[in-house]
Image 1: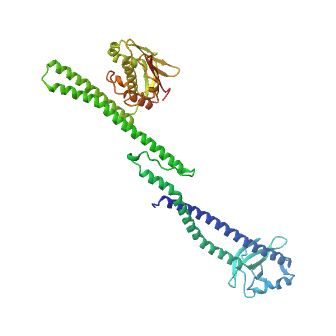
Image 2: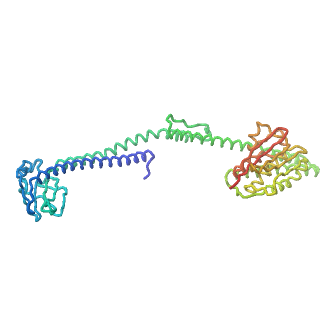
Image 3: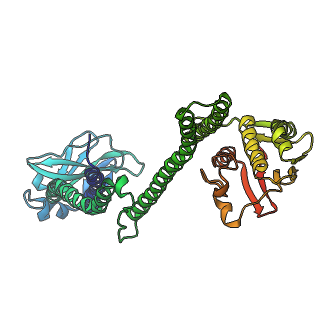
Length: 460
């Protein structure tokens, strides 16, 4: 059954109301039923006590001593609130009966040993019947007294009550459904407004936000959540646009250089050595462009979740020593001393490949921005499970520290052509560190140097 949300609300409320009404109706009927029949049974017992006073048991025989009780008016009439009396011995013979029982006989059960109440009919009239055992002093059952009174009034009341309930029950359900439907429709109006506003938002008006309802309820929470989602989407779009703009800018520089070098070559005939020199420049720019595309692809895979880390225990000392060896010529060119103050059996939890990529980026940056005759030091703090990589380079100004992990950000844009790089390295480092639950922080002073700190998880 495919119902709309408001119809489902109305249906569920109606089912709940139907269940409640049914329970209430059953309770009302039960109370009226037991009250009316209890009243009848009290009258029967009162009559039974009066009759028992007029009965005498002698030599296992039943003798009626007070005939006036049998001659009361209520024992003579049949049509208006009659009372019927009948005494039957143990053999089933009628010993006595009231005068209104001349043409009738009350059915009885000879197996009743004490008393029993049940419904019956006499002369097309509904009665409530009580049958009582008449016993001797020794407890022997000598016969039975049957006392019956009309239950026509109770029967009529109960029948009318059933008719009223049968009519009221569907009316209650119909009214409940209509009221629930109207209430659900009005309650959902703010949601329809949210849907309409949210449906009209696209990239051209992503700054639009849904209006917050006045009532402090779940719909307000939904509106706030939608607005927060739109904020994140807007930021993502802005970052994407900025990323595309920065990538285009970074690509434009090597492409322009390649084009310029090739145009120089075709203007006129040149010496072979000039061709070699220009081609070498083209190769440098091509390598720069290739490196940029490779890092863009790597960053894209990281953010898409296509490449997930595999955590294991990694020894830090041989990895850092291997990276120092990789950058041996760069270190020698700037006369930078590389120190490694790490214990021999220092182990950390990380992905080996990703950790090597992080360390290569950090050490490469330390070399690129390091001063001539400077120092790079890798230090391990066992108490804090932290690796520090410090340099004595140019440093970073305090206002730039929060931006160094942004894509394509270069601290000194005026020196971008002098220092190789494209500003993606630290963005990749940040992303890989987050994927491995490695906390990364930075401290720096202009003219003194920079320290990157990696806090590793103690278990996985």
